[in-house]
Image 1 (cartoon, rainbow, N blue to C red):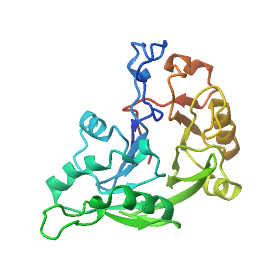
Image 2: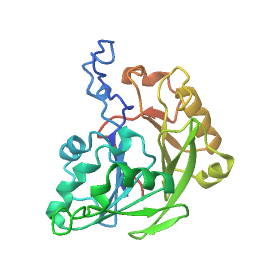
Image 3: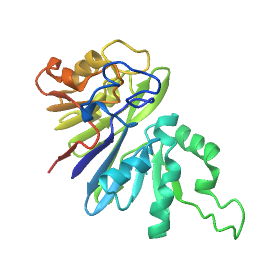
Length: 253
């Protein structure tokens, strides 16, 4: 199973528009972050988590040729507004892609992107691109079990996902005890670690480290990073922890 971090940035991306802070001016390519999303390849299929605002750019950069399914974490703009970029895959393969999300996220997607799911006028040629499915229990997908992980994202909820010994928990400020039980025995955890300072809707670096230690993940990668985090500060992290960067890949057996 190959994991590719397509984007590890927060909602503004890095550099942030109008900012000339040291990270936004950094010449280190790992300080340049597109909006958060992730690709999982296994059994000759590719599963995308979130259609970030930068999806087209990410897919071109990584040479993504097809998407077989999409998992959505929640309906905030930076995680869904690249949904129209899936049209290119549909044009090539003529397949309606299944997507999976919570009931609330499916409702938000249907409301904001009706044309993606329904042919608005019969014979218009604008056929549906995605078929929506509500996920609340583990799902078998292309020969592997996808486990949805309920998370707190400030006053709202989001979904993380576990596949085998890997889990992706973006946009979260707390992990309910019942969800922590679903995360035992992880080899690799990718988790929201927004910035060094505290934030009401996201784990900061310290909070993400504490959460990962409680789960006892072997390796932890912090994502959804703002321009207040420099990749050059990775040395400040304890052993077993690292910062994500766009294009980062790793394999799990």
